[in-house]
Length: 294
Image (cartoon, rainbow, N blue to C red; front, side, top):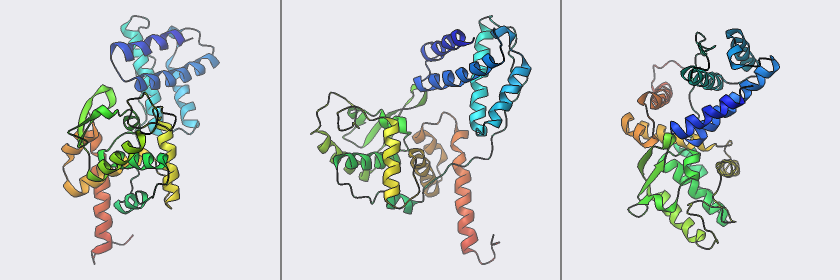
């Protein structure tokens, strides 16, 4: 029922507004699920969608056990589609016009302690694949990368030797981040091993068949190494969160951390101040003789 409108919107978001392909795909994925729901309601035209249909759909999202953040994303995708159709004159009023998304819970990202990071990176690689995986972990933690950003790095993205990395982030925005000495050593070792793999790829990280490594492969490799090191399964984003938290604890410079993470808004970066306050409170409660013990 909505398939044509969804594809038109997908092309508009990606080709005209220039948003990242992953963002456009995320919109389409959410909207196709909405389309499946409307089909079960036998709503045969976009002009026939009612506010009651949207309220029922949101209720189903809640019942399915999705997180508040995921539900917000689904509603945001639908709102964007209806605004697009409204501007094109397909509909007069959005059926989500007066529906408010649920408030986000007080979400705090999971992080590793500096000691956990040291334990993770004390892994001793025995194969070329493991040398690459340790290099990936070092670089994600050193530069605060998203997993997709790590997978998309080309060798030519480094400047001044290996000291700086140009990162293509969300919204096709490029940022320049410094690379720490431990990560540089790991990259140099991996490049030695990479030279023995037959490939036509420009990618820094390739698999043993010479193809660019995927974000899913990175996730699986980091999970495997973390478990081998006696840690709970570590997701790449935990390394990015840890990067930001450890920098904030040491420097308190939120604006610089915003630049390094590639956040468009400082408000996004401010989540790490809550983590920093939690850390300070933990230290206080353990150390101060008159602190309230919980």
